[in-house]
Length: 305
Image (cartoon, rainbow, N blue to C red):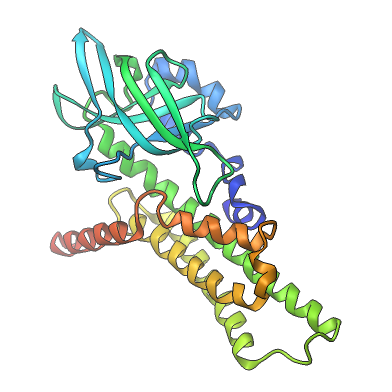
């Protein structure tokens, strides 16, 4: 479904499942399930507030903090950036620190709570949903808002969710690349039928062959990762970064076949390329993901896995 969404329009990627709402369904408290499950399964969106200006997606540099003010109650302060769906999302999963325990914590909040302020920004790609900053000013939290067993469970929840979510992003990116491939094939066929071209060059036919093989190979690997990956597995990091990079390269090669027709604003190829380039930064820059993946591989080797 995610592959088909990517082919049709990458901005439809949220119609095929609960996406970030999965964290609430898997890790929410009994009260969170009572408040949010029906809303999530009914189609309301959940935004994820993780990145910060100084640290990006570097978990160790997160500064947002929830401070205890009474038994079972906290106040959250901080600023999150590059948050997708900030206007459309009716719930937010926020990652932050607490002074009471080491490690990261996560909580689900109604996006309309007092103290939550949203500021939009205009992205260069993936513009079908709103993006921007979210400010948390003395937002009240209770024990029931925390995901997992309580403070300190955020890192495990993050890794569990993105081991699932990154293959979904990979499939969307590969679907967008497949659309570019199909558009290039259709355009070449039309030009041959109308006798605008007498033949297709060897280099162009080679591009089409390599592109098709690369898309299908990456998609098969993505299916395999979906079926077997665990949160600590290096493949959970590499699948999105490598699939997006491959999709961008395929798209850049094939869009030249279309010439100026592929650069018109209304062209599905232009939109697909803008989305693919944006995916290189969404969920962390590819180089950072691959660096983390290399570290995970080394740890697995040393531990004899």
